[in-house]
Length: 394
Image (tube, rainbow, N blue to C red; front, side, top):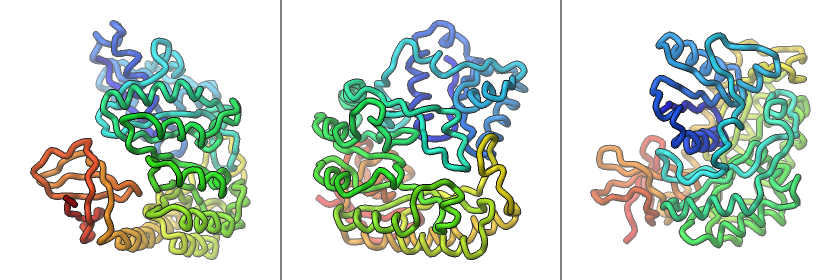
């Protein structure tokens, strides 16, 4: 069967699974082992270069390469072509099935509920590639998750290009969708992936805290702790507004943790701007920070900004912020030592099972039992590398 390589976000991973299920019964793709379908990403220069490097390697190996995903859309936008690479819109693969029934190699399943983004942050090419907001019908999503539950999946992660905009085009709402999923037998956990701070208010949080299966973890992109840089980025908030909402969530949801995205080296970012970002990470107390050096992208307003930051400074700032974020992460984890957590275990390495707590802390537990896809109550007692080492609560 054709091989599928996926790059980029959770939405791409979901769409790769959908491609897989669509071609599984297709004789053409099933009978040719030399075909490789690349579901691509080009949100940063780094990942785009990884995709292109992979294409070159596959062509040298005389593979038949089919390119789809965001790079395919970018090439079409720029009227570019790749020699000896077949470029196919992703929709061409979705003609047989529009829902997934399992998630290959994973204990929890990502479920795409929305596509497209209309935020147009000054550095981001995604709205040009993904287009306007397109929400999937609520009924279709619920049917898909019922099927996943029937196939043994206990946890679903709702994902989208701009998750919080779900229903903007259809009149449905994220809260109502979660309410319906909360009632699905077999589903024990509901997570939401990255959501912008714009969509979070007291009403939204008061609704979420009443759902039994909602996991108390939020990934909320910050991008910068400097109001000046946030404005240049086209982000519609100041740091204090972001921080006030974080505090509101902490006051309403027990055991809640936060992860985020931060960009370093945005054009014009001074040492003072960067210092504000470092202070923001310590103040919010993020469990994990995904750090991205600014990457210039075609057709974005940020490309035309002056005062570009030298790559050496970007790397140095990335290194400094990583050190700070690792220190903050350790402090967050230490707060949960001696507190009961529920863990969905995913895999075993040597004698230790690995999994994630409801608030997305990585946990390890020594056990001879088969814990795969089981939710087990544990008591963390020490930090070991990136994990909380725990014992099972009987």
